[in-house]
Amino acid sequence: MTTHANILRFSFTLALLANAFMACGVAAERPTASAATLNTQSITNATDALTSALFWGQIGDPGGYSVADVLKIARKCNPNWGTYAANHAAAHAGLMGAMAFPNPEFEMEGGRATARENDDSGNRPSRNTWGLALSQPIEMPGKRRARKIEAEAGFAVAAGEQAEFSAMLRADVIEAYYTVQYHAAQQRLWDSLLDVSEEFHEIAKQRTKLGDAGAIEQINAQIELFKARRESKTAKRKSAAARSALNALTGGQLGENFKLSEGFNAAPRSITLKQSMETALACHPRLLRLATELEQRYATIDKERTAWWPDLKITLRKAAEFDANSASIAAGFEIPLWNRNQGNTAKARAMAQKTYNDIIIAFNEIRRDVETAFQNCEAAREQIASYNEGLKSASEKALAMAAAQYREGAAGYLDVLTARRILQETEQGYIQSLYDAATARARLELAIGKQMPMEPAKGN
Image (cartoon, rainbow, N blue to C red; front, side, top):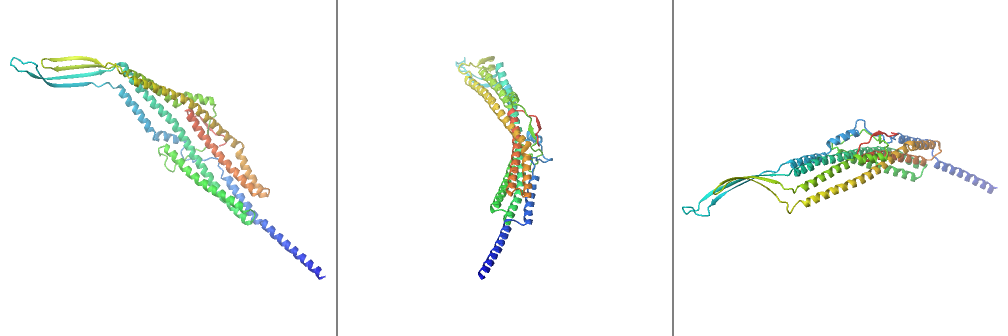
């Protein structure tokens, strides 16, 4: 009897211990209702903050400089313009030198002459003598004309160099402008992601403390936070460097704290590759500059070919000699017997051939650049279209659904983090596509050598 009672008492004790253990286990596995509500509300706030921070590349200060404003300043204040002004002045000086007439020559001599024989008095008389001569070289008409034509061609070459630089400067300014906007967008994006990462890090700490997550979740959230801080600092550095590069193109006229008004809101109008190629080969500044340079090379050949033509030299002479006074006129010219300027003429022909080869190379490189820039431009347009046609909205919906399902208990915390990361990567990719489209347009304009018409980009 006693043994049976002891057994019953022991079984009852085991049951109480089991119930207590199960109660403790449940309490360790599940947070209280207030803790669960706190986690759900924190994640909802974090996802709402991430969604509200989306700007999809729409950046710009209404009171800042537009692209046209910066281009106008660069065309006026870029320090390289002084080089092309000097080239034009050099061409003008070359024409002045080509048009100049040869200088006259003046000779004067004096002395004393003594007779070879004695006079009646037995002495050899002596007298003072002197002579004056004035000479004027006269060039052959074709010689001076060839020199003038070569000098006049220098103006076209200088203008061609300036036009080519103007096209390059335009492309560089546009690319630098949107590079500043790109890094400003990256900085804004990472600053917002830094705030969100801090919130998610706090959520992970709470979940770990409450036993709703393991330590690995907090470590992952901390890694995301460190990454956001690193990228935010990097974006600020790159933004400062891009602003410095753009300001340098304007000769420092934008100042330190300048603002830009235009975001990624323009794309090149869709034109065919054939139209692009025909336009480039018809009016590219590089080809026009090389054509004027080739004309100058041919003019140099004519100049060198006529340079050996002898000048006619007219001389007026007056002299007081020992036994007579004289006045005379003389004409003379150089006999081109040994040197007919063959070396310089051959060199001029070789330089003309080199310029002709440069034109062939330019045609080939322009075809390559146009096709490459065109394909890059079209690829960027297609990327933007793919984002506007579904990627942007789908990534936003995915995060909203994950947050809603998490609140209802149908999704886990990792589902929310995954949706958040996809949305973040989607916005980064979209900003990159906008930047690629803007810079590809600038490179295509440079490859064509002509400003392209503009239209608003769809979806912005």
